[in-house]
Image 1 (tube, rainbow, N blue to C red):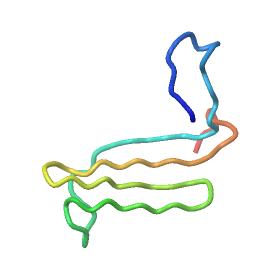
Image 2: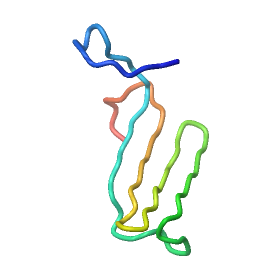
Image 3: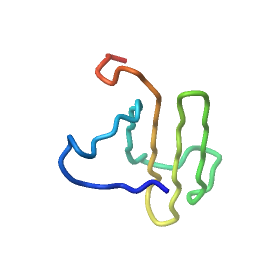
Image 4: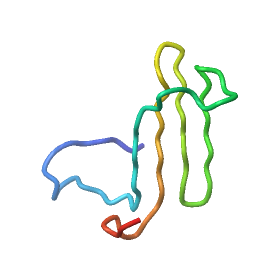
Length: 72
């Protein structure tokens, strides 16, 4: 079982070799219902659109990288 722990970085910071971006869309992706959740996962990258009946959907983009400082 993994647990999330907070404390001094040197004791708890873990490199997941991933970049993550979360943001809210203005409206749901066309042809999907407002509360639908959409997932598209490929090798080393994924996108999730979390649909909600009462507000705009939230999107999560992720990709794997060995160099999080490298420009994309």
